[in-house]
Image 1 (tube, rainbow, N blue to C red):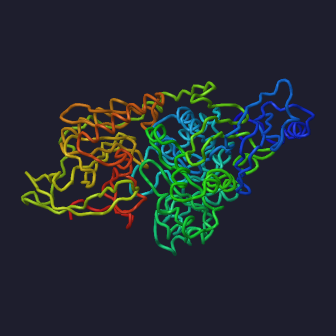
Image 2: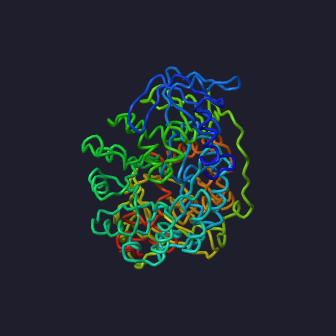
Image 3: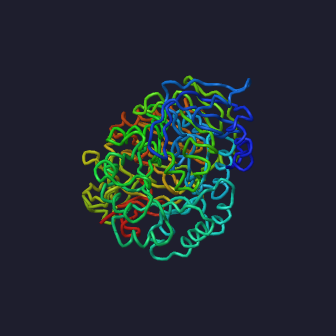
Length: 597
């Protein structure tokens, strides 16, 4: 419990005992609610909760704990739900600072997150992780950190802005509030005995902390070899069969429902159809856009989705409370409403709708009557982190022209990165494209357009070129410095002039994401914090992202959350094919390949 205002149980247990006995008054008593008991799966009407020193002293009849100064809150008609815990998510994906994200998440009933800040780690290494972790410690949201494990995500296929070695990770694991190892994406490295990966995992296991996983492959032998290393969870499961198999092998199954990856519908069938024991399953968000946070919610939306697919509401709530707390070995503090636990309580009228009316953390009312009730501290990032664009020179249209190996040819065959809507995966495709004056041309009629990845960390001038399919972009260009996981500058478009314009505008902004057409900016979201997060408020970012969404549609792209799908186009750890600053990557073979066949 890292926040300096938060009291450890051992510091306040005597006080809590006296309140339970009626020898001291409670500070807050919530009366006559229906308790969602995540231990027994019961709904217990007419329950009071007495709170003191930020923790729960008693549940049941709390009449004897009420003194003259006790604040009494009537919860008749309300369910008392433990604060929701997100067991795997990246704050950077929300484009918000940790503070602004906390405001949005708390209003939706999320009282604790287990963030993996590996996006900022790929730009600024341990310093970036420390800054986000530090920002989180002063907030009413409980921010636990899993220390990033794979920076860069691969060793030979891309260049990030920083790297983390075993010594960095050992040091980070000892920070207060660091609760485990972030998703171990380099699963081939684990399986084939990479010393760095084993050093990190051994350091985590030695400290009694969780090793969180990332396993998108269907290879059973590889999965079992991966599990023998000490990895204990996975959030990359997309089919019911994968989920059932992982559960049978003792893996903690994290079922993901983000803005662009919708895995609940299929994977939750392990509960609704296979009827498995649910104690080793949690629901997570992974990546959520600011629009989703405002329009649909955070974890409350994921719980709602599980309920819509046929899961009992109390079972769904267990998957975002007690199951998460047990997985991270924090059951003594969070995950339930019971004596001694942190007083993180969400008042909800209808469990199927999962809309909080009041949110309490550490015994303080944080959100009530559709507004936040407390002031949040202001956290300022250093100038170095606000100036993270290191591109060698301004880009020109010529930089985006890929010459054919057969300059006299009229057509050529190329490998293409195929994007898939609402999926983190891509498919390896091929296309026949025209060649004009020795330059391979895009073909919007085939939905094949230009793609580029530019080093933005080292000023090397390195640019790789390729082609992509699936976005249905007809005109203009888009660019982004949110480009998992190395977060170089990615650009995509029909017109090379617009691609150069988009890249140069984004460099001037200090990073972010942009849509242009005909030399005009249609929409942009400046992300000054490491090129990943905005230093603006949630409403401002939501407005900018809404305009961005409309701009993507204006250039022809009909996809849901297209900027999130685009942001993964450079992620060489999820099959099948990606672009990196070094070139085109065949992820299945873990090697660079030629664009032209």
